[in-house]
Length: 236
Image 1 (cartoon, one colour):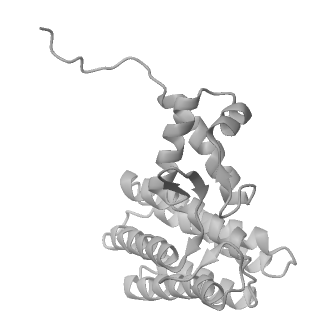
Image 2 (cartoon, rainbow, N blue to C red; image 1 turned 180 degrees about the vertical axis):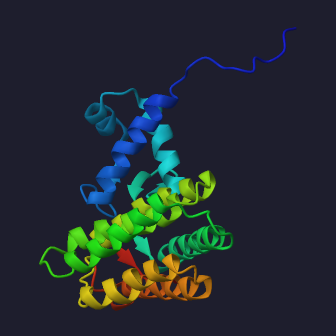
Image 3 (spheres, rainbow, N blue to C red; image 1 turned 45 degrees about the vertical axis):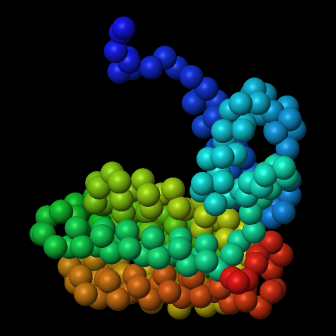
């Protein structure tokens, strides 16, 4: 009997990843809303793929927390719960500290190019805080965070942090957060964080990163607990 082959032939994996990506994007932007049923045949028709990849995509999205699967009821879009917000922010908080420890614990690890990118995004934050469109502020902030993570070159840290950005975008779109002090946030949590990184001040960088993420999570949790947002549910 021949041994199992090391390399397997191509399967439905690419179709599954495609379907998952498209459904995930639709959930993030709010095309599919919390509680909406995700019917396999409809998704198959929309995505022009067979049913099996769609079924596997829904299972994948259920593991990511975007979809809820119930026996005999099928799939539906998950509501945003306080526990999910806390989990996502705690993970990103921890990954950020890993990145800061790596970058600032040894001189020369942070390249001039990476520091320049971080500085540019920090200065963009100050400029964008003066505009009316807060969506650009959010986009720039997520890029700023990712730039710090990317600068490490630590592939697992980069991948895990990046994968959770979709959750942050979904929280923001679904809960409708209004940022009332964008100028203060840009100065206190972005520009000062850049300056701490530039100066190699690890303790200060840790403190600002911690405060930044605590404030961000609290914004979402307040909306969930107050019941002001559709599609969010309180922790039981």
